[in-house]
Length: 71
Ligand SMILES: [Zn+2]
Ligand SMILES: [Zn+2]
Image 1 (cartoon, helix red, strand yellow):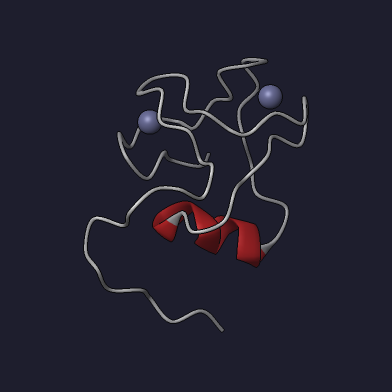
Image 2 (spheres, rainbow, N blue to C red):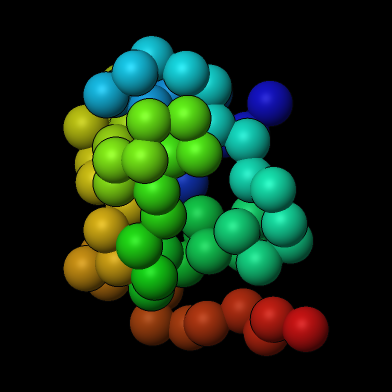
């Protein structure tokens, strides 16, 4: 299960109701600091959390201004 970075519920695509699971570590890392858009691998829409309706469109400001190092 992947948790939404914002509401911490299981991350489900609001467009197609499919639970999102990142295919790569990069995609997983992108969830936590949301600087790049994430699209649903099932329907191809920009991923929007079904619960809190937050779009992972790359326009979000991270809660702390600090980026975690990505390898
Ligand atoms: Zn959420
Ligand atoms: Zn979808």
